[in-house]
Image 1 (cartoon, helix red, strand yellow):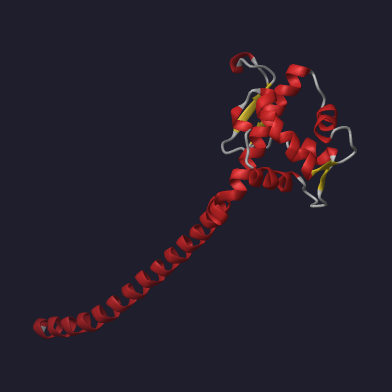
Image 2 (cartoon, one colour):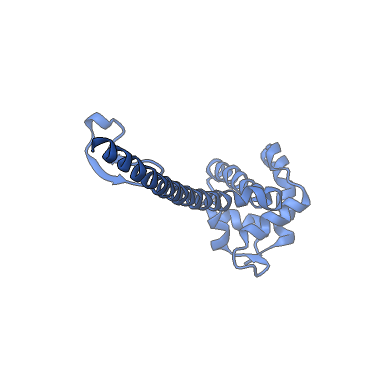
Length: 180
């Protein structure tokens, strides 16, 4: 009788084993599909983040960096000459109320020699692209507000940090916490 039961059990194990294998295969396929969807989403996020570098040979990124280089040099110039943003704008525009592309380009041509900074020697194509980058409303002129905009620095918090009321963290009081 025990043998009969063992034989019967072996038959049922074979049937159950086939169903178990099908279930395991379906589970593995579902997990693989979920992982694939997650990876595709991560890929899209990466493509969007890298778009400024990959589209048009990274021109948008390069122009942005050129504007940042210009802003940094002008910031140093303003500090050395004790100029305001408005006074520098008047210098660029030749005293006019608006800064045209031609006036902007003409002033940029003179800057490398005037400030003794070789990194400000931009070609005509780059100067035109920089003007378009700064001219946010695309009206063909750079306003004082748009000109001031190149001096704004933006930062992204990537790790939580505590802001204190002094430089020595051990002796300072916490005033705020910044999180990503």
